[in-house]
Length: 624
Image 1: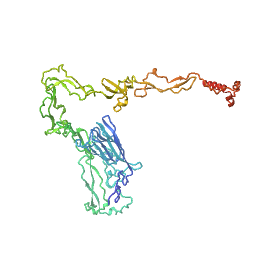
Image 2: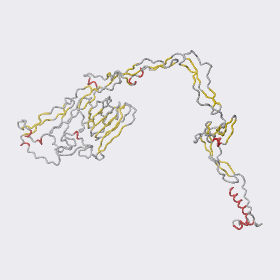
Image 3: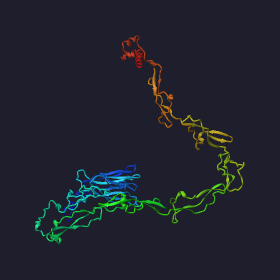
Image 4: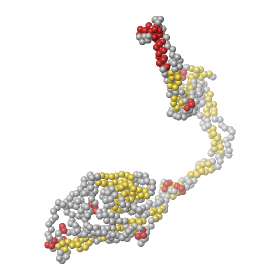
């Protein structure tokens, strides 16, 4: 039968991803992220804190750089790459677990550094980056127990049969005298790395399941054979703290003669406990790092490597003072290197003839970058500063000059009647003639010649006059011109109805114009309707300062701002005379005094008097 993670025979319990014996993977959570902060100062910068109880730890640099990862405990003890000393890739114990430090080969890989550990940790650890160049990003991930979960037992550090609380045995201390070796707290007992627990055999009974009844043992004095320690196994190391186990054989109690183990009760056989041995440190040695990339891609360059003085102790490689390695010859830290022979420039052809027969021209030659194998490669493979010229000027002496002419234009300047055709004439250097002329002379060929496309009699066409001035002094405006339909006769033009030229495209009679920018100007709306029709009212308008692009501006002259309000209809109010509105009685003044105009009969009978009173009252109220 198999033994479960709880050390019970026949148990099927296993450790889940959270590190819990018999767990169901629900008692933990994954913590992950990427450290992308931009750093400016060189040196150690803290990236992330790994809490106690963390498992499946993965700290990985996202791409290769000249930075280094570092790890130390919360107490300040360095585990990897501490005190500006770069450790070699390997396995390093710290925080109750074993960390694997990877640094891929600098030349063949682009992957970054990484720390990996299964955990769980038994203390808080801090991850740092030794910053030397821009941070490429650090990905971190670990698993921690949930909020209400007991921390996972450190099963990887328990010996067979050891209780879960780790209290098996009574420790004895053996202090190491090497002051340069870094001591660290032991995972379970809290002792220093130089202290080793010595377990006394038979001091404690072996661990048994609670539901199992111990077998009844015969009285000790009746047994003829028992187990006896006859020695110890060979130490696992020759120096630097190894381990060994006691060896028990079955012997006769009286003669102490070794017999077959079948004579002894296997259930009473003591469990061998690990004991420390060969505690003295191993001799120091030079730890040789890998060579860096060659400083040059071709030709002679330099490469470097790190040389550290190290000592093995307690299955760990520790960095110590260099004087401990003085008995050994120190390897070289620098060396020359040459990846390949550099390519070189080769002139493949002679200079060509000058591009002109006289005057200043150019000539060329073929220059190639050739590898050490004789192949033509890209120019970047060679040193561009040493590239020979492949083009240069050449002077073939002064040239004669001649008149150069174009062909006559195909179109006559007039569609009918007399016109001209043109050509271009220019004095230029003549590469063909060898005449020793210093100039083209005064006999310049004509640039125009006459032409005639036939009589113009009876031809109908649009005739456009000149443009008028722009309608504005600044900004956008318009120009006008007169366009008429005419018939050309011998020496005269007859104006025709525009309909006669309708089959021809009519020239525009209006176009936009723009003289100069106006800058900011005052704009205003039209005046509003006057507030009163007589006896003085007012009207208003909105005034704004706008720039050339019709956006609000503050650059207008305040003194030129138009008025936003002005009086209007200041004339007296004149009542309208109604011929049908008359007084029918001579004493209508009595009706007014008695205030009887409010009645329809008196308002009609004394219409004129009642209307005058009503107008006076409305005017009085208006003045109020």
